[in-house]
Image 1 (cartoon, rainbow, N blue to C red):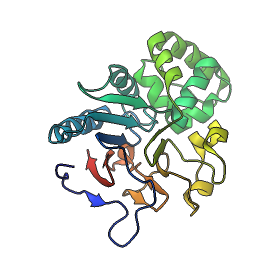
Image 2: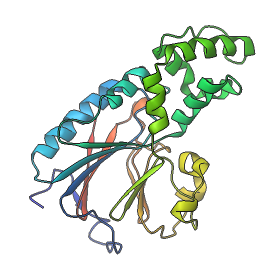
Image 3: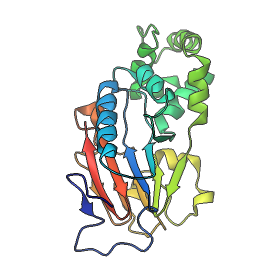
Length: 258
């Protein structure tokens, strides 16, 4: 590889062995982006950094993998969805994974039942970004029914199609990219969608070799969490932290932040 961006380190550091198979195929430079949560300005800034970084390298393939949770909590969920729908920068491939907050949104678009759970987890901000009147008590079923009607009218079919197209995971070389994580001891093809979108402690606390280094979001932390079997890159952008892109090429990695 022709040089490393500032901040790159050998995979797992000098003191730990590189797990067999960890790394990416030759000619691929990959950027994995953590939870955006409606933070459009940060997303735009991070993508600018990704484009600038890639310009300094000769990779045949340049891929951006977004790990899900594009909506909720932040100020411009609709804008984030539209930005991703517009496709990747020229010369890049783009893969958008599904997060639990996209699952919340899809469920509400089908029915207001249990919608209060989404509202208290950032759904109010998403509805507002689509122009929905969010006044009233979100625990009042009459209010939820009204918001459901307005939201179903406000969300374009193209946005629904985008949400329906989101993948649950993506594998490249020795890495598996997924929103929340995987259930240890269960083969990839037998993983439950609920675990891929929601799992926490059983995955986060596991020291098991998953067969891949799992790169995930979902559980925010102040800094990137690097473990021998997983790397968490949700650094809490919507809570005032950073929006993180993990940069991978060969058996080396680094990070960009916005």
